[in-house]
Image (tube, rainbow over all chains, first blue to last red; front, top):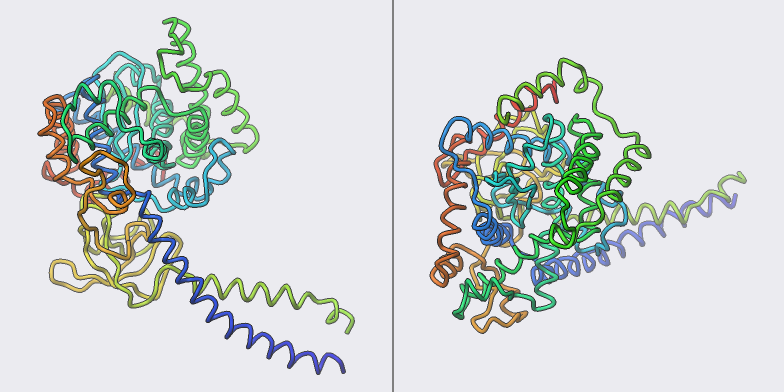
Length: 317
Length: 186
């Protein structure tokens, strides 16, 4: 009997709650909209990130010189790398959505997390090759990704090159460049020695130039350890999601470790912000083991591996 | 009847309210006009026939600041819209992330004095004009940006577009072919 009385009570409570809820929710929605407007204060439009990326890229290519896209071979290389990054970006979209699972490498606020989920690139990711024997790669805000000839030559097969591309794509997708931009702005860091050499004047253009040069100098030191670990993590998951061998990330990191030993690279001078490579290798190995990451069965057949390596050899060897 | 007493009615009510909240708090409202925030050369600046990343057909291309009308359907990262493309009204799916509520304005973010002031920061405006002004201030930057221009033009040519703009449709087709040839997708 009690139930018969309770049922209508419950339903009326629900109805009142819904009506009250609708009004309350409209207010919540208004507040959310207001907050969205405020976010603009420290966020840049995709087009602005692109122009910032162009400015930063200018300093990178001034230092290394990009390969000229003038013949069939260079066109093939650019096409190959851009198709690869485009594919990884699409195939790894679920990895981005599960960014919270990337590990607690970066102290990302709710707003910053939302930026990652809602990141839109003005012209997509654009991959270029730097004509240098140095082992280097840079990802800028706005989607520019630069890989040196030296680093490409270090790769033994397509899956290893995909590991490099996936790691750098991670810096773009996870908004690392823009996080550094916001930090620089908060600390009012828009000048450096080089920026003062390039820009002596004043005004909007000169100040924008100083900002671009300063950010690129920051980039030459590498992203911070948390961002590097996070990019390794995203990149390894992205390899698995794309059908590439996640172990390729370990192989590439080991190759870089060997390169550092062989060339007695001074960690202070070379990517000074990067964490010790041994720690990165271990973190990736642990991730592969814990998450049981592996390439898709269909993509790991001898036939499939051969198809990828054949085109890799044709393009780069 | 004991189970009815023990049944977590309050939790159910809370869940219903949360579900309602999620429905009403949705950023997209049917009939609302939103604007495209990416360049027409972005691989995402397209209207698709479905939300299938690999098999959808392209219904039309979008340009920056183009108004689109929100329709009543969303599916994961996609939302259904209506837009005018080359004089024709078309409907299809676009990624939510390429839309914003207001068209892009052009106000400088870096102040004349160089100070990081919130007012100028709140505007929009690292753009071609600011870049042009930057080039006037530095020969080094002017030469370096010419190399970036050369790179972008070369890359765009590779993707079947004119040097200023690659063709998003060609990019998507080539990416799909790359994945198929490498036996990364079926």
